[in-house]
Length: 387
Image (cartoon, rainbow, N blue to C red; front, top):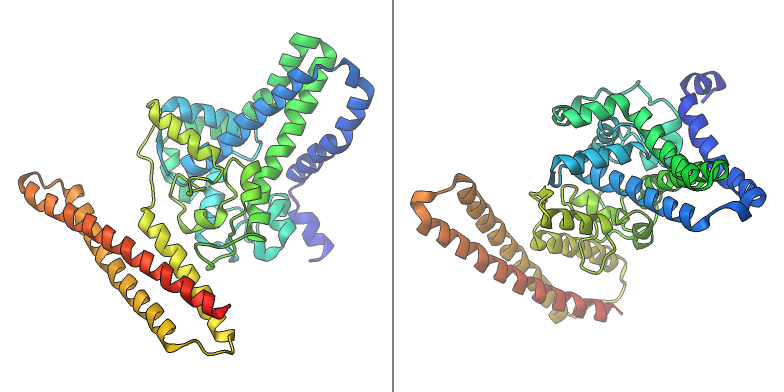
């Protein structure tokens, strides 16, 4: 890349903002604390940092990401309004622009059309893509026409910069001023405004970079997305990125009961109080089968490299278990599709038929679960033999 091309394609405003806020947080804040630390109400400003971080970060994960980008649930207007307002305080573009980029990321992950492809390097996926104009020019917002129908989304798209500045920086500064005067306003701006913003920025950026670099792939290895429980701790549950790329429309990222996913829990609460509905869930059996197929792929690779022979009895047990599982899975898929089709068509005049289809689907689930248990037993036996 020659210097003329580089200079012509740098997004100077974005670059200055990202670098300026980062330097302010890491250099300016320590200097400010050194000078005025004794006059700062740390309880107040610590609470502001945490409160604004949660409001801003959760508005990205719950609002921009799961609600608007993936339509993984429906939300009433207060939820949409608040996530759009506090989502703007993350200063990561409007919901329309953010969702357009994210939908293209999922559609073209790891390819040239992926706006923040990890194939172009860690820094590019992390923040470089924001600092440089995309090859081929800016992409049109044709993939978010559904969101354009929402007047709240249209309003936020027009005014997100003003909202982000007034609420993201103005609100903590105002609270600090009302409590402590000038020092409080400066502390509110530095801690609740700039430092909080940098934390939210890199919380989001690390999903695009780190979660496409290190971690586990329990569901699929067809793309670079990986699960990281550590990143989930700092990103309101977004760290389970391998699951998300395999099942992007599920409102959950941490699908296991023990996995840390505050965004999922918040959506659950919103559903309980009537502010969210139509939560989209991938069937447990589909998730379990994805894990099994991934284990089978890993096992096949291991068997190719294994020099010692496995006894025929062990191999046959595993092969039979695989065949039984595949047949049970086919029966389950067919029964489930037939039942769902009947439910969608609302066969009021054929309730007996609907009941019969539901019973067949339930029986298929039981058979599939039994086949899964047999497969896991056979798989464990083969793993033990391999040592």
